[in-house]
Image (cartoon, rainbow, N blue to C red; front, side, top):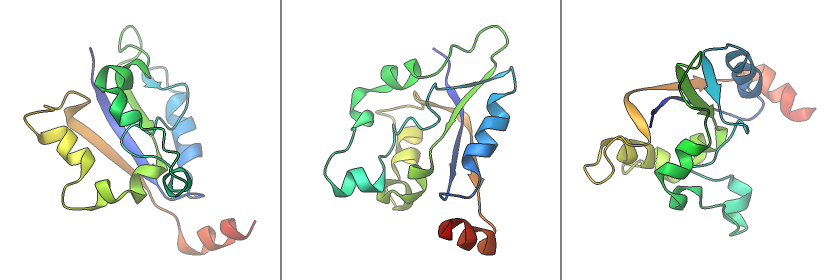
Length: 133
């Protein structure tokens, strides 16, 4: 089983969809069919409504099944999920992404030791205008 090489995060309307589309067009990069897997976190609205997908509870094998195999031309696999930016688990001292990556109980099985975190950050004025449209 090959590991995930990168996880992209970013605020809504800051270009994560465009950036992930540019990466996905590269023949050596494998994305899940849906840009956002929601494995480590769910959307804010689903959490507030108590209707989370609970993908994390489905296990590491489920997570890896969401990506194309790292064979042939595909040599790098990853996902973009802005929801990861807003989770208490990702922001708090017991970060789920970090814990998932470093604990002995779950030894880097979902992501590799060389995991690349990609942050897409908005330009402030452009983000304000995008929110008004």
